[in-house]
Image (tube, rainbow, N blue to C red; front, side, top):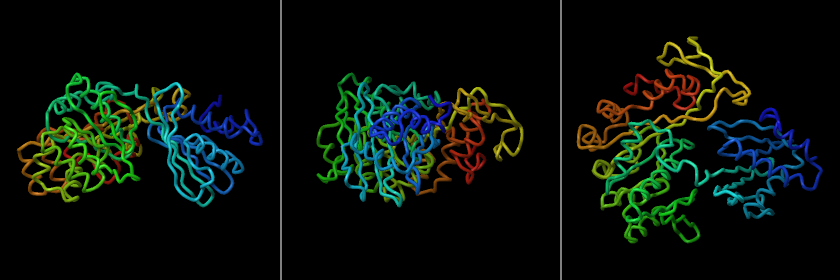
Length: 408
């Protein structure tokens, strides 16, 4: 086995020469095994002029795994396409397919895209259906988990999970579905429309969009409303049509779950308003918005510092920073933690601000004044307890906003 991830490609080549007719088969098997074994979310195969660059996204960060020579790039990508049932002779158009792995409930999604030096391929490792089965092992703050369970026991209204790509939104929604299945004891009708279905959830009638049949998220949601549902999950709110259908469902006696791309809970309300959703629908239809981010956890090898250059302008006197050791693959990090904020919509000052179309900053100020613990509050607590580093907080939350501007 390689001593570091950077030597992974070299290790594969040392075991199977690139001129071996079975090189592509062996290489792809090793790459997929490595991705599953390290808990990677994605495998990237990026062609360049003379090589195929290999990277794994681990704990939200791309990490290099070395290079294959350019002479094998086409065969390696073609092997992935065979596994995913894609057309190997079409290299001039994007393609997407799935691979069902033997001996596990997990699936892989293979996506290819033509580039200057050949086809780029990305493999998404969908989580096993056994992972993150319940809310209590997501790592949510206790107060947020309690609020979320309270909202899930409502009979109507919308509960949205927001955050950027890779923040664990879908994982959280699937855990919510399992909670609802267990809580209902098969006595409530639970349906979903997704793009794509990432994990099968027993007890939920799951449907997938189908462009060839003109079945998109908004259309699927409208048809599902005629299926006598009590709980509806929409994979993602992407456009006005889906947002309107989702909010209408939340106002007509259905509990609706969905995900939405937004930087914060308050920003989600502003973005929905910008999409053209009427303020009264947001105030009356929204139960709560869970906004979450994932930060890498520091390994035990971390060291404490009070160097202002390493604190990156954050309002702490000292913090822990990554060092790197054999346990963490010299990255200084191992695993991830959740920074979460829960905004609940009530008929108070926040509700009135929604009706008056106040901006995200005003909404967030009112939410924190009403007791919401913001993502920045969570971040500072994580720093003070040594869970993560200033660099990781800035990587995930950025530099443009600051803790003081969010009411922390």
